[in-house]
Length: 107
Image 1 (cartoon, rainbow, N blue to C red):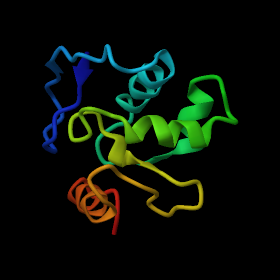
Image 2 (spheres, one colour):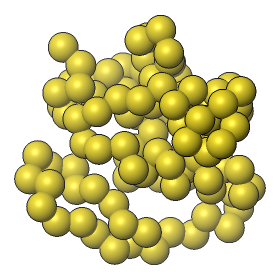
Image 3 (cartoon, rainbow, N blue to C red):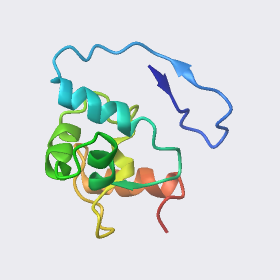
């Protein structure tokens, strides 16, 4: 699985293997889409669902992200609500806000 680095220097990617065997195929698809969201950008739960070919699955996307076993590596903090509000995060919304500010994706 290729990942984006955490720093602003985005020239390198890392090859890291993860054990995702405990996840459903739907959850794995969600994480595959989410890992494509570039550093410093936000996308909506609906956007993720649409990229998976199931535009009505936005709530299910949120539930899948709640089960992300690697939330600080697979960037689920970059997924927000369609109305621009943060939505949930397994490490808490304050942590989500902090990560997004660090990436300059939030004012």
